[in-house]
Amino acid sequence: MSESLKNLAASAGVDAGTIEKVLGGVLSFLKTRVSPETYETIETKIPEARRIVSGFTEAEAEGSDGGLFGKVSDLAGKLLGGESGGATDLLGKLVKLGVPVGSITAILPKLFQFLSAHLPADVLKQIAAALPAIPGVDPAALLAAPDDTIDFPAPVVELPGAVD
Image 1 (cartoon, rainbow, N blue to C red):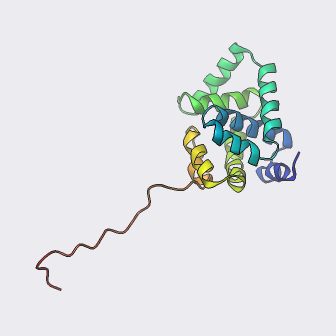
Image 2: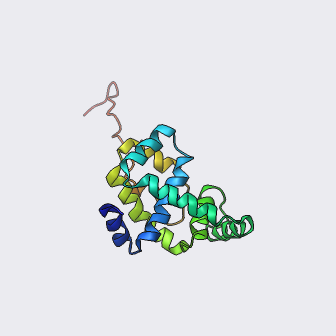
Image 3: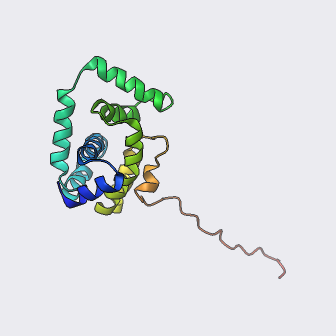
């Protein structure tokens, strides 16, 4: 495991196996939600990304039990207030691999900071747009993605006949 991943695990307060599961889950999730070019950038800039995603995919395949996965996804959906889709899929996969939901939401802010340190701003913006809403976690803020809604001061308009 690279030194930067060890540092990530230490800063998140979890063991290396847990950080690899969460990172593998997030990267695997992103692989299907960003362009191939963007994912290639992610894969080349994040230490050991290919190995981690491969390990996540293998672990997911080994433990694939449709009934159990369905129950885990339902549980994740209930914990997210009934939301379905991306967040449920991502959290459901991680919970299925033994990562508690509370740990996931505690790890994600550190993980997003880690990604911010390794990836260019345009890639971070695409990741922020691709990630699902997860209660208590704001990917756009944590990824330091550039904001398109910049407040500019109102232009000064001089009206004809106005007196100073």
